[in-house]
Image 1 (cartoon, rainbow, N blue to C red):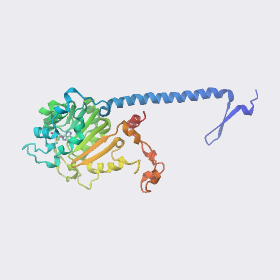
Image 2: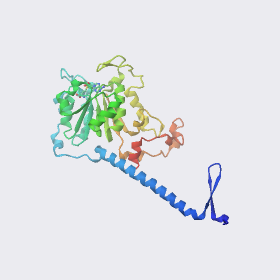
Image 3: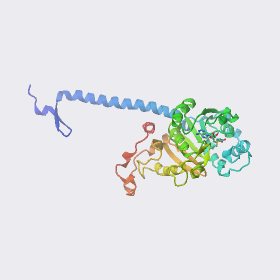
Image 4: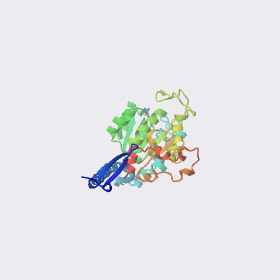
Length: 345
Ligand SMILES: C[S@@+](CC[C@H](N)C(=O)[O-])C[C@H]1O[C@@H](n2cnc3c(N)ncnc32)[C@H](O)[C@@H]1O
């Protein structure tokens, strides 16, 4: 049969200009196939994203399901200052032996009511790294009566105190990434809303714990606190928990303080440089940081932060010495997979 030229469609493919002649009667079948493939793709994506988002929402205790229990009435919970006088833990300035208030650079009751007050009457999961005398654990138990409290401690002395027995304890090394991603998560179940690092205080340990736990063990909207950052300023050879500082000091760019100073540009990388990173993919999850004397507070992003995950509309107004000024810089921003999934709903 002779084919009339007008009955054929011509499609150009690639540089080789391969001409594919498709007879008019096949157009309908091809169209159906295309629509079917597109539908399959979008339905699959929707189901996958819904499952993950459901999981993330379920995990986001801080945001969605803070339950007020009967025994958590604010009136029954003593203020932090009163509890610090009762238990006298070192983090609130008390010398472990003399019980005198001698560590005034650790007077965290100055800052904590502002950051932790909202958790007092709530049901949530809390992890503290470093238990020592256990006085801190007893204090937290009374300050957060509805919390499920976990402690991470590597020293057997610290896992057998009255305070340790009052909470759930996992014994291990906070600098061991394999342990943090493995046994700690398995035993505790993760899903923490608050994590306080009061462990070995070596910057390598602080960074290892932060990198592993902030992204994987902390719920969206959760709060991560690093205590005793004074050690970032200590000199080489100083000993903490039987371990010497190998590379200390103000000029060492690897200390936890110097690394978190750079996080200011991570949070603002849309204006600075979208490919900029300090700790790797965990950076994508930082909503805000705050420094206080001897403390860093880091808040994790939650669903409400997804609105910011868009291109900066005035990139042309950025200075030419800011890499984000480049037109395609937004493409450099590789979102963390889980963050992308959380924001895709
Ligand atoms: C400052 S004390 C904790 C005080 C406690 N949070 C309180 O408020 O009472 C530090 C604790 O961290 C523990 N520690 C030191 N290095 C550690 C590591 N690499 N992993 C886990 N715990 C560690 C020490 O054994 C010690 O008990």
